[in-house]
Image (tube, rainbow, N blue to C red; front, side, top):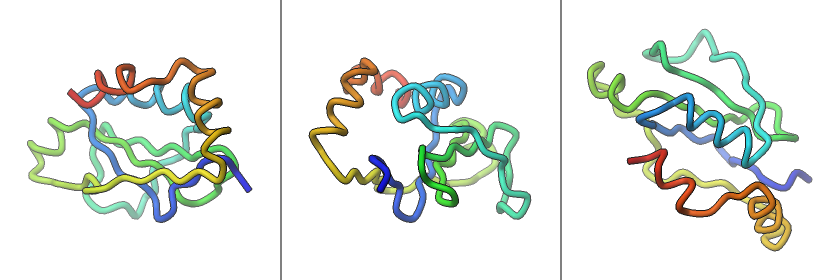
Amino acid sequence: MTLFQTGDGVYLSYSNVAAAKQFWIDAFGCKEAKVPSFSDDPLPSDAVLILSGEDSQGIGLSDKAEEQRAGLMRTNQRSIIFCCNIRKAHEHLASRGVNRHRFRHLVE
């Protein structure tokens, strides 16, 4: 079993997609995946990341301002990342310098 899982997938909007993408790659070991061609209302900023060990459910990222201009609201109300071992998850994230302050700058 992988350390982190998305369940049904996660969709997030950011003011800086490039910084958000790098955060997810650094913190969770995500790999970039191709944006599905069948996605509804694709935007130029769209990106998809897959957590290490997962193969289908991804983390969708897009630019918040781009979504607003297009009249879209795709962000999950509650984006959940599951973990199978909270102690290992904390150690994993702490070893990568992840804390709530590092994350906060991505969503403001």
